[in-house]
Amino acid sequence: MHAQGYDWTFYDTRIGGSQAVHDKQLQLDLNTDFLKSEDGGSWSVGITGTPKQDAPHVRTSVILHVAVEKADSNGPKFLVCESHRENKSGSSAVYLNSKSWEMRETTLCMTPP
Image 1 (tube, rainbow, N blue to C red):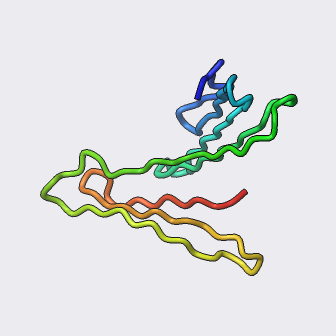
Image 2 (spheres, one colour):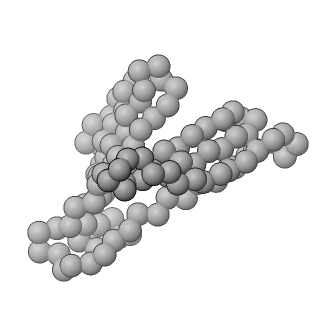
């Protein structure tokens, strides 16, 4: 990514925020919106990519890298990825479940827009 600019358009530690990255080479604006749950125990994130108006047609992908790092080498840890069909239309969600001493049990759910 060759960021022309990066900024938080909104940020509040109590509820979340929105940030924008402007990629000059790919002619793409990438927006991420973070939302904290009411109890403060979890986060949601939405990622949207918008090509610039005069951008050539290109296929762009977002790659999410997840790892269990700094986990106690003596304690239990795991990272499991599963795909489940959510409804009759065929859309599905991907669930990533992990466990480590520091993070306890954690679930990341990715759904299509």
